[in-house]
Amino acid sequence: MWHRIIIFVVMVAVTHGSSALTREEWYPRFESWLVEHGKAYNVPGDKEQRFQIYYENAIYVENHNSQNHPYKLKLNRFADLSLVEYIRSYKSIDAIGLWSKRETESLIESNRYSPTPTDVLPEAIDWREKGIVAPVRDKGTCGEYIYMLFFIVLKQNVS
Image 1: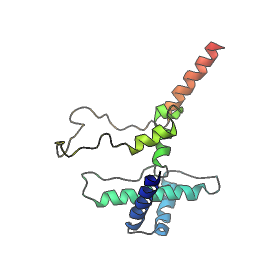
Image 2: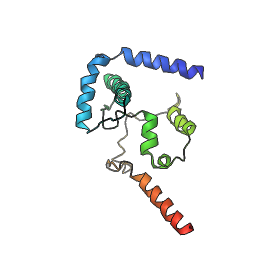
Image 3: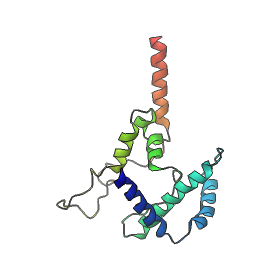
Image 4: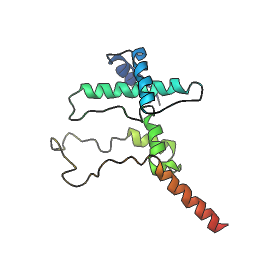
């Protein structure tokens, strides 16, 4: 438990100290992002909480893009969601609550696919050329409706 707290504090210190913009300077960008993506928050305090998550994601994107990666990140319509919220909302198996909080968090913390020092990896792989990656599609949360429909039909047939 303590190691997670220490890692979190270090991550916060690293991410907050490395932006060219202050937290206050990010707020107008957040407001523009809200308009661009048609977002509004009605619950008191929710906008501030969503801004904090947006800010942390923006810092992450900014830090990533400042390094020498072969790809760049961009804030999209999910920028006000934490990683756990995104997984719980947009991963269809989790949309109906089949994963526990612990399983979701272990998925995020996993380094299962991290290369080891002995791995020999190519400089780049274009999965499109290999026919493995399909074009990008945004299905939103449609997976959860399939499961809801399944349980409705099942309940009607059992009753």
